[in-house]
Image (cartoon, rainbow, N blue to C red):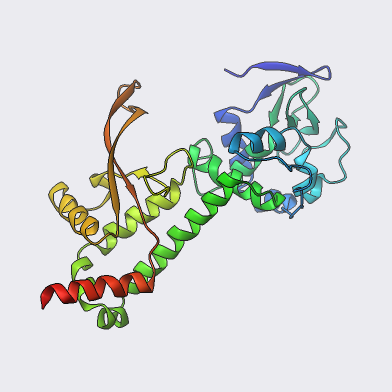
Length: 296
């Protein structure tokens, strides 16, 4: 249930799941979406002491970031009502609710407004994922970091991990090709049955880069289940054994607490966490030489 709050004598509800979904649906309309063109804004001097994710969220929600990155909001005075540019027929204003800046929208003065933060908006623009998911939030926050030109350790680590995964996926696709088969015949043969499953694990890792989960090397660590691999459990374990032996995949068993979707209770148990080293042509050549020498 939404919580009604009073801001400058105007009542509003925070945007919860249903309201965020409505915003995402509205932004699917190209006529509405094009009004909200994003622009780069160098806010690095405004946020000089950001070191963590929490610092960043705290800072950006306490500034009127709407006018910084959305051209259509740049000339909107705070707390002055204008025609809403998302929901047709609504009225809107941008202001601070004593803590965070929000875009407020309502049907008329008789109706309670809904207040959207800048992160709510950027999540709604991520139309290829569930707007209420943690993944969608991380994608929105990464985009905001780039738009505002703000740098901090956690964000820099995430960018490096993201680039690693994108590079690994690109090199793996190249490794599947006929040209690579000539250069790395032994490695190609070892992986031939597992290219699709390995690519799925890599793409899953790219989706769940989280600074709170790192392996012993400081790489992003995540959970992946055999049922998502397209292989039987036996074949999946066989693949893991090969990949670990080739140092193409890192597997660690760690205790983790998570919300069980069936019982809706928090469960603590040992899970397998996966992570990846950075791939490179040199890395593949070294593996090929090692596999070739084992055959001799």
